[in-house]
Image 1: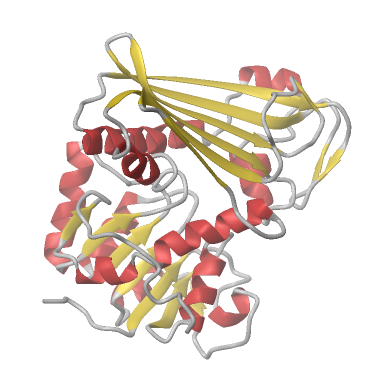
Image 2 (image 1 turned 120 degrees about the vertical axis):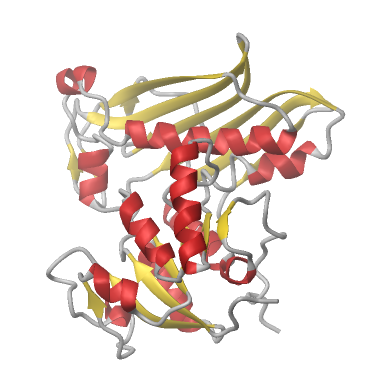
Length: 351
C-alpha cells in the first residue's frame, strides 16, 4: 500500500543550479505541489519560490529557517545543496518527510552513517534515496543495464566529458570549491576543496555498480591533474585568466587485488585552449560507458539541444523528479537503485 498519494507536497532544500529546475518541474506537474523551499541567503529569504526559479509568483515563500521545513506539512524534500549536512538530512527524515538528493549517498558502506539514516527513517516512517547523472546514472545504472549484454566482464570504464564555460553553476562552486582560476603555483600545492567530497560520492557509485554485478571492491586509487589556460577565457561564472586553471581531470579506480575493475575518468574544462590539451571530444557534455568483456559494449550519450552542459543540470533534476512516486511509495529506510522498481519518466509523455 502506498504511504502517500499524489499530488505529492514538495519542499525544495536549496534553490541553486539544480534546485531551480526541480522547482520549475514541480510547479508544472499536476502530480506535485510546491509547498516550500529552504534557502541560504538573506536575499532569497521570504522571496516567492516561483520567482526564485525565474518564473511567476505562486504564493509560496522561501525561508532560511530549518525548523520551518521540519514542521511543514509536506510529503518529500528535494535536498540539493552542494555541501550536505547529515544532521539536516536526519532531521528532515525524522520529521516524517521522504528525501531525494543528487548530492551523494547513492550507496552506503559506512555502517555508522547508514545506521543514523535508518534510525531517522524509522522515527519518521520516511524513505531516503539518491539520484543524479553521475553518480547515480552514468556510472552505475547505465553500466548495470549494459552488463546484461555480456557473457564475461573484465572492466567497466566511464568517461564524463564536460565543457562548463556557459553553465549557470555558481561562482562559489567554480572558483571556490572546484579551484578553477587558481594560478599554476597555487594549484600545484592546493587540491580543489571539493576533491574529498567527490572522491566519496564516486566511490559510492562504484560500490553500487560492484554490488549490482555481484563482487566486492578491495581498494581504491584516486588521482587529479589540472590544465592551465593559454589565453583569457570568458565564462558565465566569470573570467579565467591566461595561465590559470581552466581544466580539471579527476580519475577514480576500483581495484580487486592489483587489477582495476572499474574506472571513472572525468574531464571538466572552462576554456577551449589548455595545456595539456587533453585529447578528448570536449564539445559540450558527453558520457561514454565502455565494458571490456565478451562481447564488449560501448555506449555514448549526450544531450540534444543548445547549451548541452546546462542540459546536464536538467538531466540531474529530472532524475530526482522522476523518482518521487517510487520513493513516496517505498517502505521506510535508506534505498538505492538496486532496491526500487524501475524509475522512468512515467508522467512526461504528452499525448
